Image 1 (tube, rainbow, N blue to C red):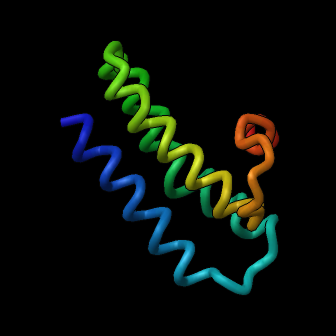
Image 2 (image 1 turned 90 degrees about the vertical axis):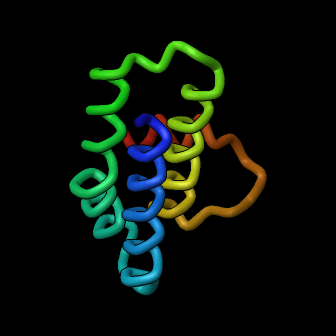
Amino acid sequence: MLTLVSKQANSNRAFLSRSLRSCTKDTRDVTYKTCVRPTVDYTSTVWDPHTCWNTSKLEQVQRHSAWYVTGNRDNCSVTRMIQDLE
């Protein structure tokens, strides 16, 4: 079930990325917090991903979302980008 939820969150993020390519960072931030983040938060609360594989799937969604919002594809710290989103 967790796989389906992370797949849905990635799908939502990819749709937003395609649709809002030329929008500002603030707009992308709001859409991420509205459409993607609630799914990830709900998943981590309800299913409590206790295996490394489940945790890495949710972290992958967060990493891709951080790249989507910031537009920064450099090899800088993704952790810092994720912290900026919160």
